[in-house]
Amino acid sequence: LPREATQFESYRRADRDEKRLSFMKAEEFDRIFDEGEEDIIDFLDLSSATRPNQQMKRVNVDFPVWMVNQMDAEAKRLGVTRQSIIKFWIAERLERVGNN
Image (tube, rainbow, N blue to C red; front, side, top):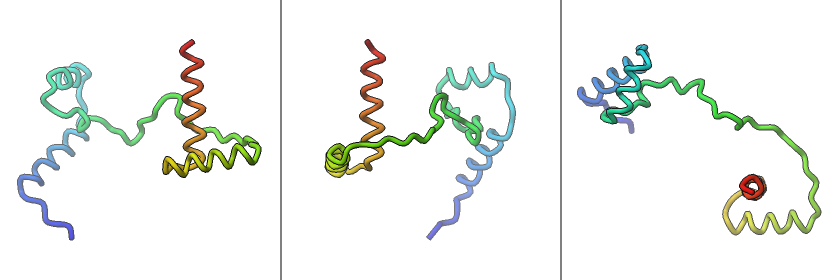
């Protein structure tokens, strides 16, 4: 069951919400970051944050049955999905090729 917030916790949450909703100059944000005494996450609006080059695009690939069986066995051994193992192996290979 959820418990009631203490008076101190309520003040902290309100203080955090005020920071999140307020605006500040870049210099002030940089100073807070550089001092490292306060968590800057409270000053960021992450609702519209994106990661560059991380958009998804669906592709269809046909594999021979023996490959699917081996991928499934390895995925099961590692406790992940087939899709995860395919993504990991392709990313691993692309990183290797990109570093040459």
